[in-house]
Structure formats: C-alpha cells, structure tokens
Length: 510
RNA sequence: CGGAGUAUAGCUCAGCCUGGUAGAGCACCACGUUCGGGACGUGGGGGUCGUAAGUUCGAAUCUUGCUACUCCGACCA
Image (tube, rainbow, N blue to C red):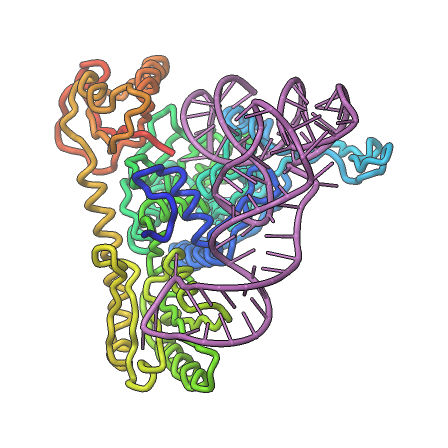
C-alpha cells in the first residue's frame, strides 16, 4: 500500500500530478495556466534561489531588478526575438476599469498610448539600459542578474514544467568581444551543471543546442538536459551567446582603446521553477517526493507521539531539545534544518504527510524514546523493506552526531541512482536511421521505457536540418544537444550517411 | 489551436441509460473507547449536481450553446 493512489508504472503523468498535489508543492490557481506554489514547493525554490544566487554572485555578477512591463516598441527591434515570442505575449492595454452596462470592463477612454508587454524575458529592456550604461571598454564586462517572474501565454501548461507565469533567474552580460562573451556563456552553463548535480542531485548533460532549437535571437544556445524516470529529457537550464544581435538592435556600443566604436557581445542565461519539476520526476517514487536533503526546506522532521496526557509536556521538551541540538550541526554549508511538527493531528497522519513531501529523515518520538534517550526514525531514501516501513533506532547522541552524515549519504544516493539510470539509458549503438526507428518504434500505445540515443551526425543546417527534424518528429523525437564531451573521431551521419562531425543526443522531451 | 475525455460535498467517485427534488467512502467537527504508530464506535456539519438556455407539471438525469480542467497532438524554452 503506497502513499499515492497512482504509481509511476501505471500512469506517469497522473503520478506526476499526484506528487505535486500530495507533496504540498503547488495547486492549480483560478488564473488560467498559473499555479499557487505552496509552502513545501516554495521552500524548495527558496533553497534553489539561495544557493544559486550565492554562486552567481561569487562569479562576479550583481543583482538588479527591471520592470515587469516592457513597452511594446522594444520588441520590434530584434526581428528573430519578436518572432519567437510574439505568439505568447500578454499585453496590457488599459489603465482603468469602468462599469459598463453593469459589467466591469476596461475603460475605453483609458487605453494606453503604447501597449505594455508583461515580460516573457528581459533582453530588450535590459539591453536598453546597457546601451546607456556602456560607454567605454572600461565599462565591460557588465555582468547582471535578476530574480523575477515572467509570463508566456502557453497553449498547454503543466505544473512547474510549463506554466504561464513562472519564477526564474535571468543573467544578462555584455562583453568586449566574442571570446569574452563565450567564456561567460560557458561559465553560466558550468554553474548550472555543477549546481544541478551537487545541489539538486540531478545528473545532466551539458551541450550545445542545434540551430533549430536556439533561443530566438541567439547565435549559440547551450543547455543542460536531465533524464526523467520515464526516459524523457528535460531541459533544466540554458545559456545563450547572443553575439551582437541585441547590441545592433539596441545600440549597445562602446569606445575601444583606439577611440573607435564597437558593438558589445551579450549573453543571457536562466533557470526556472521548471527545475522543481525535474526534481520531482527524477527523485519521486510511489510514496511521493524524495526531496534531496540540500534543498529540503526541513531536513529532519520530528513527530512527537502525543497522546493528550500530562506526559506530553516531557515529550515536547525532549523533541524541542533534540531539534535545537540538530540545528547546531551543519550540513551542505548551512545549519541542519530540524523541525518539530506540533500540529494537533494524529501522528500517523503527520508521518505520511512528511513521507509524501519527502522530508529526508522523519523521527517518530514516543514517551519510551524520551525516557531512554533514544530516537526512532525512518529514512525517506529507504522507506520500506518489502512492503513494510523500516524504522531505525539510535541513541539521541548517536542520532545527532550522525544526522548530517545521513543527509549527505541520502543526497549522494539520490544522485548516484539518477546517474546510473541516465548512463544506463543512453544507447550509443544506433548507427542508422533504421536502427533509430526500430528502437523508438511508431506504435502509439508503446509504453515501454525508452531512453536517449547518442548518435553521430554531419550537422546539417537550414532546410536540411528541417528535414531531419521532420523525420524525428514522426518518432516524437527531438535533438537535445551536442554534448560538450565529444569523441576524437566520428562515424557517418545517421541522417545523411555523410561523414559525421559531432555526436548529438536524441530523446523524447518535455 | 485540433482530437479525446471529464465536470455531483474538501478528496475519490456512485446516481444519468429508464426525469420525481442528493448518496457512499475518505477528510472535517463533538463525545467516548483506544494508543510504539495510516485505530474504533456513536452523533453531527457540509452540495442552488461547472455554466446559460431549452423541453417538461417536474431536470443532476433529456437537448443545445458556453466555460474550465486532464491526456494526446500542434506550438514553445
């Protein structure tokens, strides 16, 4: 009897929805396509924010905040960029409401002279600021970051993975030349890779996106790709080298040493609340989420077995003291986050609430534990032995001394498990397109687990690349990226038979 | 935006075919019994059946429009 009604094997999308709901991560909101992020979900995002913000600042970036609303005319300047986002922009056109025939409507007399766009991303308005702030080569590099919400009017939304409004971090930088901007692009990508692996326990493959998957307006786009438990790929972060496209569109020029005028080279990079979706689909099980300890808002949850009797006072004191001792320990560079769940509810219910949320260590302390100076706990990573819940008992001193180590072990185990799955599910023996068709098949009802394929190709461009995309689309596949780590020599292109120049990852994706 | 499905209590759903004025389980509240672990008994609160219109003496039930959500696709970071 699992804590969730749906299992991953029965229906993966339903299971995902169930985890989001049952783990108290988020719920659908009355606003179309948007979600209410609940405490456990927001707590996870706050941990992601805190650590990533630290790493971003550590590498020489400062935080700024730009406005939510962007003048429409700003988008007209970069053709590819506007083409990429035009179909999903929310537009603000009025500044007043009025009762008309008993209905509250935008006041026709209060139409804005220029419509405002709710930012889908901030390149344009930040570029405008850059053009004023950058005068000399001495002003470069300019390395900015902002934490913000953005809105893209998506046709089909899914909690955390693709919502109309989402939270993210967007870095924007300007540099003297391509070499310096490319260094920055790769630095951001490496921050994401190491952050995902070290902190979220998400093994990822970093690489360059093919031409047809680039960010609108980018010269080169890089991504980190993670593998979900259904074998699909999730793009968990992106970094773009924008060349001088935005500099040209927005006149970001500087005076160089020789007194000449030159265009700045810009970059942008971001990760969003989508990462939480990746954590769910990587680490969740049929009892809910297993939250990686590094991002768990509460790492050790203590559930006192209260019985509404006078002895409860002693038990509460014991639990409070235990939490205080744990809080003095440190793990992942911060204090251990221990919490006593004093909610007036049945202990068994509280236990299952924390199991579904995925608190890494759940202590269930009864009067006998308190009397004997013991701690009885379950480890969310190894919740069951067969069908039965497995509980452990240590002395209080032992538990306090070992807690940080247990959390670190759990973090490492989650990563190792996901890494093994990732590496075991990449086929590199598919060398012809027929091999690819045979493996992925075209049967609509084929629910068998399919991982990724790592294949050689000749990097076709333009119409030839579109043709490749069409052939893959039949198999519901897309090119994810060309991993940074490439072999010394190549075979032939799986699509054209021409000599290959690169290895790429192919997968079904979110 | 196309295809399919769904919409009845906080949640999961029954009732609809064959129209007669609202049900179950879980959750919630009270009391009691339990108590090293998703306990049990008794009692109780809670729904204008997504929405609008039509047919009818009478609509959760039949008809039509609309809306929202889920899944698949298209689109997309």
